[in-house]
Length: 218
Image 1 (cartoon, rainbow, N blue to C red):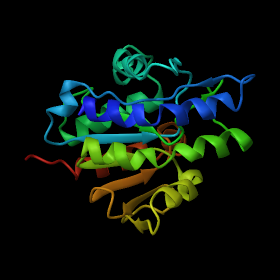
Image 2: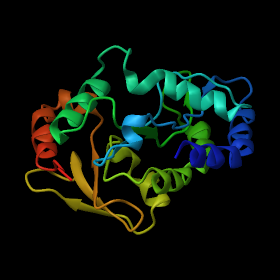
Image 3: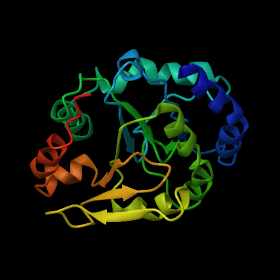
Image 4: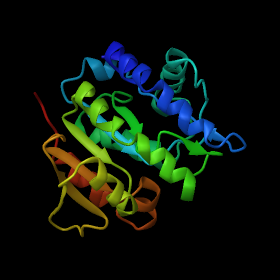
């Protein structure tokens, strides 16, 4: 799995560099390159979480192996502070009956800008890398995908997955939580508010209760 991802990213190395080189005076950090741990690779109930972007990241733009090592060393926020994003992620693993720190994570935006969300010209350039996500999913073969991207990224998702359907989930409105249907996504794919926003809106428990209904035992 790691070797397949390495080959994928190696093939896109010039594309990563081209995006960063467009903004030599700006602090583009990344790219975020997945290198899942053995817990994910050996897990039956594989969970892939897709976020918006990193909040500051190392940048070894000329060395794919070193850049993947950044992901490995971070290890899904194991030693990071308990932000809402990682706190809710741990709870999702628990609700699914998964071992903690066994998911894989990537982001729609492969780069952040100074640890923040890219906008304007930065977002347009970074979006040229979006379809890498299709290959990541093909390699990772998750059973469950959760897009913690909020509805603001829905147009980006539609561009990545043409014909994508956003289906209602009972007791939720589509803005806060919905099921995604597309031939390139696993059946259990969902788009939710960012965990911080889920918490602020008082929707965290409702979301986690729904996750517990998806527990897969084989």
